[in-house]
Length: 76
Image (tube, rainbow, N blue to C red):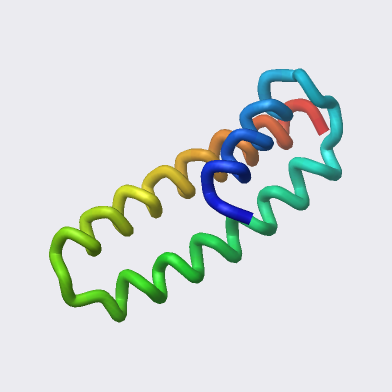
């Protein structure tokens, strides 16, 4: 599943459009896998433009994970 789809689903769950702690847990697991994969790509990448793009993607993933974990602590 692409990052955009993961983030959209996570956003829907966090905004309350969908109410399922289990679904959020599953998305967090997928984000964790995506984060590891992106970190590996970043370590192997030589081009500065691609590295910049991957760093931005990692920041987005980390921010969304943090937001979801905070939500999980208060609501699940």
